[in-house]
Image (cartoon, rainbow, N blue to C red):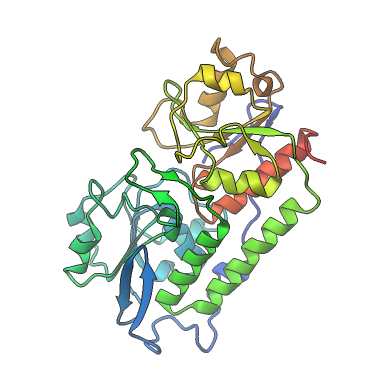
Length: 345
């Protein structure tokens, strides 16, 4: 994503790279690509029993979040294709990503996925492998292709049938992301790489939040759309970030994942800091952070917000605002922003 700072007060920090060992190609005795030892193996996922007869060699990953996990596990050579992206690939994964064909920036057709001859299909969202998405899981499974959906989208308390992006009655935690990493590592027979990646992410969170106290600081998370803005409710990935930095989401009383909230209500809540999704897709109005800031500073309903007057903006990738390994990047950047603004003890 193009993120050249265009205002001195806008905080824009490059995410820390994952440890080289996590995404590298070093293979231990039980971590060799292509070994069939221990197969068939079954993974319980979102109510499905996913059985793999051998390590996948031609996986198709239908969302950016799960693709970046595969790349971080050093599995580009066993990923036949990917699709549905909101951002440029995470730093450090550019070369690996260049090896993987992209079927579409949005959802590809079922036929196009099948043309990639997948032996395993993964997705970050139930909606991708469900009604109205690429196809339903059963359609792949009838053809002998096992499927996997991120557990973060079917965690306890997640209701995907409530409209839009669904709602959560229970706060999501990073354990769901770590669980996805471990599941995918097990599916491919690279468990050691999975444990190294989880350990590296946990250490990044520890370092980012060490000694941080932002209690009393209020945040709002704006993902997209200026006309009917999508702002984060209590309990998704932004909730993980907010709890990690010990701050408060001004819409913590809203359990919808990404409710559309009018600007007058945002003005009433008056957040201290606004976290902005800096998206490169072009599906809604005000996708980029540049467009969002232009709107905030010129719109009568928002230009007098505390965060706008003080220019307290933190820019995140869309993936950092979705449950993914980049949610850790979100914790790092929001923590650094609060410190830079003098709002964290």
